[in-house]
Each structure stands twice: as C-alpha cells, then as structure tokens.
Length: 591
Image (cartoon, rainbow, N blue to C red; front, side, top):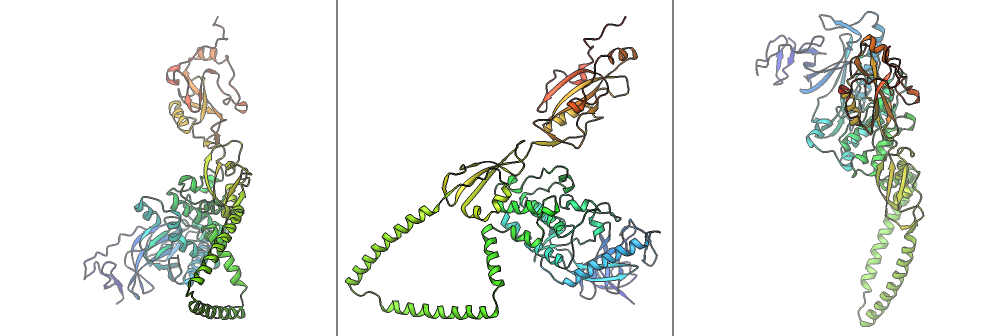
C-alpha cells in the first residue's frame, strides 16, 4: 500500500488513515474548496498538507518530500479566473472557450519554473527543487519558507536600517535578480513580503508568471502597490530588467526610510515621492540618488540593470576604484600575470637585501650623529617647503551648483572628491523639483578640499491632490480642505429642492487634480435653504455664477452668499448651516 508522510511527526502512514497512529494528528481535510485535499500524494513523493495561500495563479501547499524527508512548498497552477472545476481524480478543467489560454499560460508557468530549477542553489534566491506535471496542470516544488519576511523583520526592529545595514542585508537579493535576468527571467513581484530574512541570508521568493504581475491581465493579477513598476499597470507597455530594478529601488527605499513608496501608477500623474535622504538626513546622498535613479517613472530614464544598481549603492570612491580595477584586470593576459608575479618576487628579494644593508651600517659615533642631525634639519626645511606648496595646491574655487540637479552633483566624481554636501529642501514655484536653488559657499569663493557645501534644493510647487467634495457636506469638506492646506471660496446657491441643503453641488477643480497650495483657489457651489416656488423664482433672477474657466465656480444656480478661505482657513463668521439665504440687493420687491 502506498504511504504518505505525517506533516506533524514525519512518520510514514498508509493512505486513507483518518489520523496519524504515532502522534494522533488528524488528517481531516481543512483545505478550501478548489484546492487538493490534505494528504494528497503527488508523483508518489510529495505529501500535500495544509493550504498556505491562494493567488490568481493557483494554490501553495505545505508539503513533505518523502525522498529527502524534508518540508517543501508546492505551488499548483490552477488560475481560478479561467478554470471551471476539478474532476474527482484531481484533474484541472479549464472554462469553456478558455482552453487555449489555459494551455499557453500553463506552459509559461512550466518554462518559468524549469529555468528556475536549472539555477540550483543561487545566492539571494529561494531554490526551486522540482517540477511535476500531473492532473492536467503543473506543480512547482521549492524549498520551505524560513525566517521572517523583510516586512516582519523591520516591524520587529521598529526602526529602519541604515544604508550600510541595508546594503549588507539585501545585496544578495540584487545579485540573485541579476542572475535571473541573465537567464531571461523577470521576477515582477519584489517587495518586503517576497524577501525572506533567513539564517543564511536574504532570499527572494514569490516567483510568478507575467499574468499575475500585470494589471488588466486575463488572470486575477496581484501587484505590490508601491513596489510594482509603472509599466506593470498596463498590458500595453513593455517590461524588462528595468522593471525589477524599480522594485529593488523601492525595496531599499522602504528598508532605509521605513515608508512604503507612493504607488507608481499615481506617480505617473503627480510625482510627489520625496528623496530618501529628505526623510532621514543620515542617509548618504549617493545612496539616496541611486535609489531615486532606480525608481524613475520613465523606464528609459531608469537604471537599466540590477548590477548597475548594486554598484550605484556603493560609495563614489569605492565605485571608482572598482571600475579601475576591473578595467585593469580585463586587459591582463597570462603573460602579464607571469611578469607581475616575477616582479613581485624580485621586489621582495631586493627589500630583504636593503634591510640587511641598513642594519649593517647603523651609526657608531658622534660624527655620524652630527651628520644625522644636519640631514634631519635639511629634511625639516624641505618638508616645510613641500607642505606650503601642498597648502596652495589644496585651494579650489567653489563651482556653481545653483541650477544643477542635485542627483547629478552627488554622482559627479570630481565634486565627490573635493566637497562634502549637506542639503535642505524647500518648495518653489520657479525652480523644478530636484534642482539647486542656492548654495553656501557662493560660486567663485576660494575654499579647500573637503569643504562642506550646503545646498538648498527645490521640491517643486507645494501641492496637494484634490479630494472628493461634490455631494459631500460642506462642513466636512471645509475640514478636509483646511487639513490639506487648500484655499477655497464657497458660493451659496439657490435650491429649488433638487439638492440637499449644505451639500457641495459643484467644484471648480475636479477630484484627483493637482492643486498648487500657493496659487490655486477652489470655488465651491453649496446648496442653500430649500425655497418655495415663489421665493425661488424671485431669487433665481438675481445673479450669475462665475465661470470656473475664469477662476469661479461652475455655472449652475445663482450665488446668494459667498464666503472665502485663504490658506485653508474659513473666514466666514457663520458656517453654511447657519448662514441662511440673503436677498439680492438688486432685486425688486414683488408687486
């Protein structure tokens, strides 16, 4: 009789048993409908236990490998969006008319995991152990989860990592992603929930096909908002290694700031993502710039490879040294190496002979001492002259940083060698975000190497996203706008009963639009008291509401009472609940 392995005590038990005869563990099925039942034996080797998680691609199971007597995770490809049911023997049945789509996406799944399995144990990647094709579908077997996810790990720490800690912890993941890219694979799901911190280092898991990681796909997609690249939100855009680079940048952003980045689809409309070092000043400028370059919204402007991103995260000097060493080593032939080794041995022999000669000629009388003293005096004089010359050489002229992008400044090797930068940020309607507004010392001032240069950098206009206001109570709208710092004016319009009293009818700025907090004013039409037909006919002939295209509210009813707020503060003496409706001063009394 075939046997399964008890997931509790790892004992071998005959198939069909209701509980383990050794530990008493119940074998009652608790898996959800659609999943394979507990203790299903796959390929005569893997005992499937409880369901761990379900996504648009299928089901993941805790499992036992009877051959190695170890825990593994098995993922079954069963995309419920295009699958109809499962037969009594466990076969997956696609929906009518979706058979071709099911077959092609299943082949994508198989090819993905075959390639991952061929990588074997790779630094920074969860190892895929096996691929089984059965039940009209496929099953990927990978090593069991260990440790904590990065999200859980940082939650326990309660503080973000510093740049050095983040680099040391997550560099293996970047290396693993580069390995995937060289084999033609993309991950598309890198996030704090798909990186696990294990006893042997950080590892990336959460592998998936294109369908699960692209919005509007035929499968039920699952994107990690804040970490998914902009191109993943559209089936019409191309994806490439730069797609994973964006996610890696977002991963490091979270690791060193403790904040989840803004979703990239929202950044396409208005990019308000602050640079990492503006959140925590101790984050080095070059490190923040590397993250910002990896997270550029436009894919063609982004860092293009994981290896390039990894190098950008190192210090500018280390990066330059590394490039020089690589360039030098790249041109060395075997003959060069033989010469280098021979020269090294020869140099060592000469050094030994020199030391022996010096020891044999140490001074033995006062004359030698006097001569030594004279030489020392001469050496001091010479040293003083050299020092003076070096001091003059150290003096440099401060360049003009004003008008340059801060990101370009910190990546400039000459600047990095001559200066240390500090920075602060302020809003500006005149200077584009990321560009230097002013500097200290001023351009042209004489300084020396290592001088601290303070840069004031533009954050662009001070803006906010317009919230939903129409069909909302004016009091809650005012509170919301005030909190956001949005300036507003309100017009109380005549109400013949079609509107709810004190609710916003129209807004001059649409929901979701970007509002400049210093220059823009939102004009709101607010429904007044419900009027009787006679009152309504009298008051509706009184005035015309200002057109929103010229700065007023949308046309509609007449404006009977206007209140204005500057900088989000309501300046009216009475709110709309108590203002009532005032008579137009130009209206004639009824005959």
